[in-house]
Image (cartoon, rainbow, N blue to C red):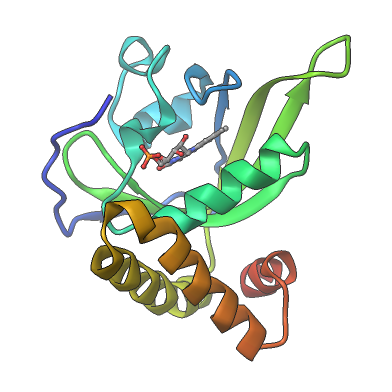
Length: 174
Ligand SMILES: Cc1cc2nc3c(=O)[nH]c(=O)nc-3n(C[C@H](O)[C@H](O)[C@H](O)COP(=O)(O)O)c2cc1C
């Protein structure tokens, strides 16, 4: 579902010891959301269950980040990411997310689980300009080439720092 919410500049912060938890099926449809999730995003359980997780997608988030996320978890690996999310009323909140594949008895991926906590402010100060740069490149490239253009920027920033994605992200959160 594509939402038509107008983003505002109102920011919410997750409490230091709160966790936002959700589960999805293999295609990213929400199958579970905890109370903290519903509270901060402003949706009821009924509004969330069965919806694609992109119900929270914020237009400031680069596509390349989600592409990397899905590529990683589909391969059965966990992924860490800083994500800006859109609430039902247009406000937003940042999270530091850890997304893991969930396995069935046959050792096949049967869904995904995401646990998010409060990001460090210093981490956001570092990641926001990079996301802005990626987003600008994606917008300039046009829809078809957006992910490739965004990924090139992300990879070149990582190469400049001589670091791979995961240690870079984990280092920012500290
Ligand atoms: C377990 C799980 C949790 C996710 N959590 C979020 C989230 O909190 N916010 C978000 O924008 N996308 C989240 N996604 C990614 C979405 O499925 C989607 O790829 C993303 O919102 C981009 O949407 P789009 O492909 O329609 O542009 C999550 C995916 C999975 C598998």
